[in-house]
Image (tube, rainbow over all chains, first blue to last red):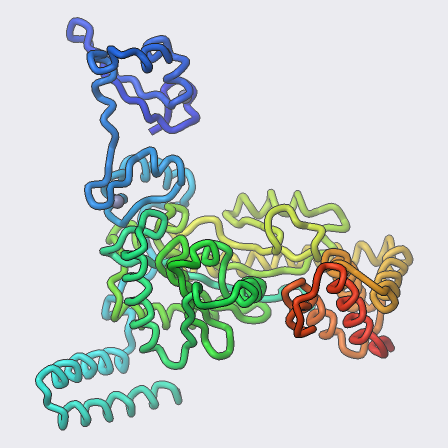
Amino acid sequence: MLCDKCKKNNATFHSTVNINGNVTETHLCENCAKENKLFSFNNFLSPSFDSFDLLNDFEELTCDNCGYTLSDFQESGLLGCSNCYNVFKEIINDNLQKIQPGNVHVGKKLNLEENLTEKEKEIKKLELQLKQAVNEENYELAGELKKQIIALKEGQNNE
Amino acid sequence: MNNNIIVSSRVRLARNLKNQPFTNNTDFDKANNVLTSAFNALSEISNFNLYKCKNLKSEMLEEMLEDHLISGELINNSDISGVAISPDNTVSIMVNEEDHFREQCMLDGLNLKRAYDIISDIDNELSLSLDFAYDEKLGFLTACPTNVGTGLRASVMMFLPGIVLTNNLEDMISTVSKLGICVRGAYGEGSSASGYMFQISNQFSLGKSEEEIVQLVESTALKICDLEIKARKLLLDNNKDALKDEVLRAYGILSNCYKISTSEATELLSKVKLGADIDLINLKEPQLIDDLIKNISPIKINKLSNKVLNENERDLFRAEYIGRVLKNNRI
Ligand SMILES: [Zn+2]
Ligand SMILES: [Zn+2]
């Protein structure tokens, strides 16, 4: 989300002001928040910080999986784990809009059978059977499966 | 002519494990778990050589870096990082780089499609035994959002003296950046002086397929190639004598100097390379110039000499070595 004031930096300070039922939301970057009178630097440092109503919404967004915070992301430009993509979804989406031509992956998919050739699927199936055979200590079957896998792999290399 | 302008092609895929924090947010034990499962999976892939960076001497790491087999980031993480390298040195899989996996394939000339096919096959194989972080909408999840989606970077190394010498570099860079292509000095930011080598690569990774990205980088590289050929023609038409003088002087210094630094040698060799490409100088084996450019860094000179030399000794050795290679190479 961009800063309301300068429209340049990411907004990291979010506040809601309720005056007689009129709710105003303000989103500012660190620089503008410092400049803005509501958030004058003195207020930040004052001991009455906790009782300062305007600052109540400041609890920082944190990834419940890896403990990474929004400011960690903003400082490093890097995320902490794959779950961070859910936690910081909005900010990341804004970010992606600026740097990527689209926001949906249209390329290769993960580990789906469609990525594999018929032969690779066959090898994969045999390898699973092999693991099971070894687990069951059925070494005769395991040896046979191993032979089949090697034959298939060799055929693949010769193609 | 294309082959001399487009030096090499490289494709890399960024991948991470689903259940582990990214490398920048990990601890020693978790990072070692990643390295262990990576090496288990990689050892299944035939005959790759596996190295833990902490077990390699720093000279070895520097050499791998110069050969583009590993990155500076991997060296920074050397207490937790590792690499698997194919016997022919075309494929390397870095572990615990910025992402858990940086799978890359590098081939000579303009060869992006083939490089992608090779690395994609290996990626498929790895994805059978490793649990990669993947999201239906965003694709492959990476530590940096600039790599999310395909995790793909396709890059081409180009030798562009004509574009530089005709002062067209900035225009070229700003034109291709509008296409989503970025241009870097091959030896780090803003190093146009070191050998006219540039890396052309895609800036984005999401919203286009791997094939589209590879196609974009390839077609842009070919356009830049045309531009380079035009620039060289312009130089020959307008500045042939001055250019030829420059090339022959460079050859003269390289053949006769007593000591020379890496940067001066690289600059002069690049001039000779250009001269050989556009027939201003006739060499028996022009390929020797490319070999020299790759082999005169401090690390390579130490290796060639079989000693650890100081800077002055290296400059002496380098001059002697270049002189020896160039001797009798001119027709
Ligand atoms: Zn602002
Ligand atoms: Zn996280």
